[in-house]
Length: 133
Image 1 (spheres, rainbow, N blue to C red):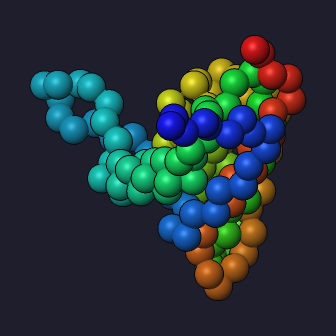
Image 2 (image 1 turned 180 degrees about the vertical axis):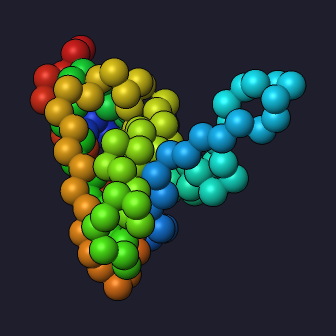
């Protein structure tokens, strides 16, 4: 007997981890490459693990997608303390690439919402706008 995978049109991923904006840093002047900071790398790994668990038994999303990212942090929503919305989005998209969707180029509608909260976590809502089968 073979297991069948469920085709989804929408999904919610709740990640009980502190949202971290994507941050890159130069390691040294010899290598001149850009690398993720250890904090950004750890966030990407943690969110990837959570996304894999959420996708277990489901097909990866195809077609055009709408993504809503709700960020909950225990700091006031200033860019300096909370982080830029676009950097948070990039961190989430990088972590979900190849796990939730094939490529972040599939996302045609993206919304990032910052919330003040005593409990820090993030919620990712994925919805298929147009499926390609």
